[in-house]
Image (cartoon, rainbow, N blue to C red; front, top):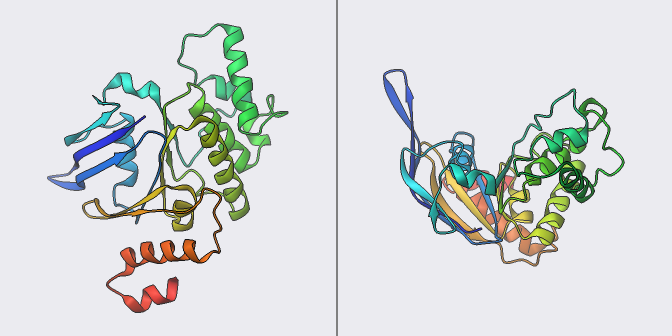
Length: 256
């Protein structure tokens, strides 16, 4: 799925005034690309994802998906993974995943599809487990499987690993990349974690805030199997940090 964001603007009313959250955002995401979006709190990253997914409307501008303007019918082709899994506590793993199905399937077809995605995210053997019996990482695997259950052409991930410990985060990053290698689904990942953005993305978009604009697009010209401690990785990391701290060179030297 190719996605084009054209001059998108978003304004929210606040009491007797308004606040401009996004201003003149233009982006093109190729079919099968992994795009990482980084920026500080309040730069409109999550708002942009909601507009792309059709969960919210732009005040101005438009989103074009595979040559067509986003409307209600586009939603079924886009999966969204939020930071919080938002699972039903009374339902098992398989029932939580099955709940996401909107396609018209027979009972047997639903069962087969749920099993496929349980296997895909590495939860085989936990089909009957309840959410409270799962770790945070396993709950997020359920969340990812539920977002994939309708076999979307694009998957939008909004800080999907932000609440997880470092080891679980790295494992899930690798799991998502394995899924991408199989499915070649277009991925857009919003994150505060610069290393995560570089590790996963083919390209990193840096956003500045108040209002949110695209400040810089940085290509990640690294092999898919990436070494986080390598010099090439560090070079890209430094470029991104400089976009954040370019006005304070001393701070930039400290944090890199």
